Image 1 (cartoon, helix red, strand yellow):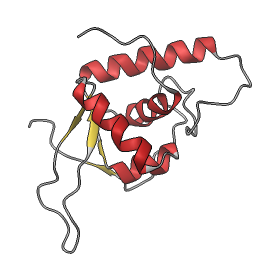
Image 2 (cartoon, one colour):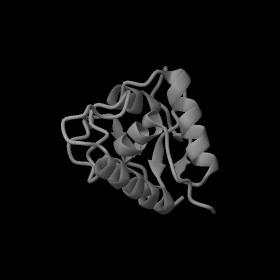
Image 3 (tube, helix red, strand yellow):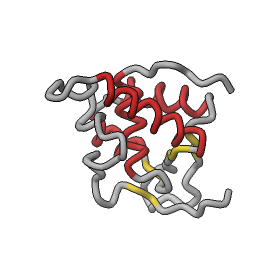
Length: 129
């Protein structure tokens, strides 16, 4: 797969949020809360990242009673590498003191540190699918 040179600020905020806990499955609601993105922006980004093999998604097998099945997401190995590279590049290009990417609470944190991870929103799903 040919690597993409640039990601939108919104996509970078999603990558930063997913990179905060790369082995955890995260629901769209948690990602929306972390990034500040609306569903009409977030879900198309997740679909594009999934189509490119950077994010994997699965259906939650046993939803809680009264709730519909949820669709959690996490970075693939390629996604983690792409996120690390894109966030590091952004951090190098951004002068200090300049605001983070639009929609991001802290997209400048290339190591994933400082990215707000709402407690209870990550979902532990076995790594083997």
